[in-house]
Image 1 (cartoon, rainbow, N blue to C red):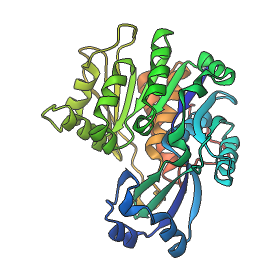
Image 2 (image 1 turned 90 degrees about the vertical axis):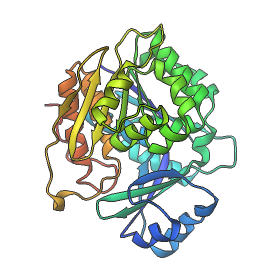
Image 3 (image 1 turned 120 degrees about the vertical axis):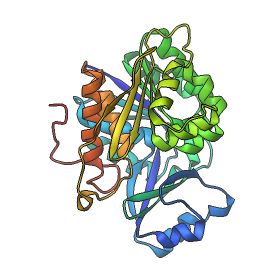
Image 4 (image 1 turned 90 degrees about the horizontal axis):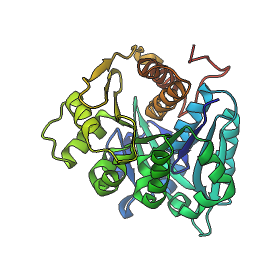
Length: 343
């Protein structure tokens, strides 16, 4: 049975709809993801006071882990992150248990609360403002506990979200180098344009150990700008990233997967390989409920299929199915009764 281990920042999403006024008040883009700053620190209290909030388990890596577990047999996926001993963490555990996902959380020794994310939905767009809280206090020591060492040893695939690199480079490198040394497949999602823009050195340190890189077209263009590729052509960017140097311990060619919403997904794999495009089955506008977490769902489906021995082309197809399912739900959630997306 395949086994997947994901790591990231566990967050409790606070979703509000028709939030155009929030975007204006806090100078937010309609479809973006940022870390909270002093100018926007009161956004959480503001939306609590003005809007009806829907609380949803979030965090990019945790979303992907739940999506992968949705596709795979029970007890196939585990997730690492740091939370507080509070009610928000209890809500996250309950959501994970619903999907059969094992959460091996570190409990922070600080006074920071479990992380939260204001998700402002306007039409089919979502703008996310994240307070990392306890997630930012994840320590490499957690990777050395007996429970987590066992999970790392079991894992065939290790998935890391780009947001984790804003604070957890030491832990990310430890996982990546372990994966590379033992022939495990190590995957990274850039997660947001700001990660590619402002955490270039962290990405560059980790990238030689990355077997599969996920991003969307905006993140790909931010990466290309930061690395002075001199192009915004998504296929060219995918090809260039696939050719970047690998660590000596890495035996697999790098695969780069770039999603573009309803447009075709672009894949470049291996040295000198041509890029491929995979069309997305369109949905009618009225079928789209919420795009939050769609990219994470794609990654979960993709990894689940690849871990099950399916082809790269098939993995893209399963990823598309999971993304399509996700956007027809409220928040990063999936359809019940369960659908067999791997069939």
